[in-house]
Image 1 (cartoon, rainbow, N blue to C red):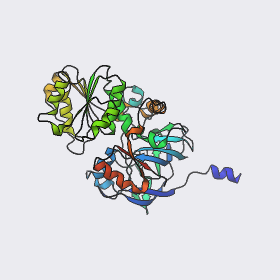
Image 2: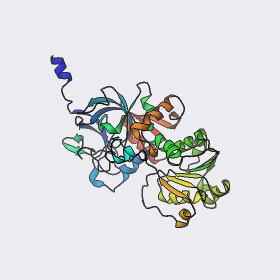
Image 3: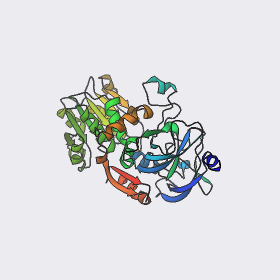
Image 4: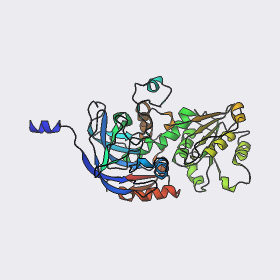
Length: 384
């Protein structure tokens, strides 16, 4: 009876290591943090692998929200359920999961519409707290530590809402499938769900990072005939070929605007263009690079500065479309399992996007590699 009573007792707070940012752009500090037990409809996850996404770096460097420090970044992660909170029936201790930065409550207007992945209850969290009670689950020596995107995977343990986790099979490699919780899925979904790339079409992609290469892969799998990659890093030319890029342009080597070159290559403009840089000026260039009448431009990047997009009205009046894309339009619980299956069945590439495997203690090295544009994805291995 004593053992049964112990096993049914509620989870307690635990102490673990986390890489804490104490201020914008400051090196992460390995701290002993206290992680509260999961609340109602929450789960506590032992993080196995997490990768560094460009948006982590952008938010870490940003001085727009100085009050949200100290903070634990990270959101692209895989892990194992350590404990479950009250009301959770979907997950059990020991389940393997992906954490996701937008959830799916499956009951709000957007979730039931079939038209959107912008959950009204578990959408993008920008205040550094949990969705449920607007509180944090982390503390250092009694001082609250803020979350990032309601995930905070740069910690050995984290607490997420059960609607922000997706169960995956026990045999899927955790140190690679974590990329499907953000970057790879965002790119594939932009090509398949948002743009709906058609067979035989022409595609131009601005920025050949993880997201851009995943757009290229999605366009290739849809049968696009011409996939133009645009990047100022010449090393991306060879990498792009492995993901379907047929033509490469380095804007730094041109004597004329890149959109003019693209128009010549595509007989008046690409059918689809994708902005994967995180630069609103490139959004305008991408819009000018697609075709009159039916050209579709999709913007995926998170801008580091100047969030306003400007474009001459004539580009829209002539029939072009500008669309935004968050997480490639995927609904995490409804759609991610099928992507995981495609990866397991080798229908989509993920492993080739991992350029570095780094131990948790060297996480600042991963940030440096991202800032120096010397990596695609660095996977952080939490166990030493």
